[in-house]
Image (cartoon, rainbow, N blue to C red; front, side, top):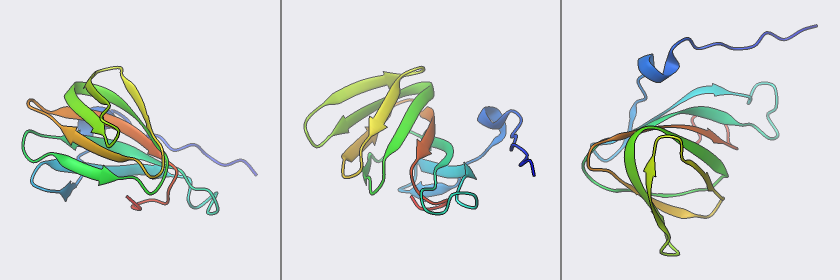
Length: 119
């Protein structure tokens, strides 16, 4: 039996991720393979950061992120730092400690190897 795909029209401009940290960090899962692959789920959605408190996050899973809008400074515990802009792609391995900071705001799409709402 065929399984239908899932479609979210205009998600980049219409999906509003919920506040997850501080006063300025928003993240929301849009879709997940958890139901079809519970042993190795992947989830994806949008991350938005507004000007304010830096977000420091330690990954307990692997994640990839593409910057869609704005600019975000992304640094890690090794001292590596990048001024991320639209089109830039990042891989955050499990165990990495990442700091996100922005002056003007930024929007990213992510895919993480975790269950839905497991961030």
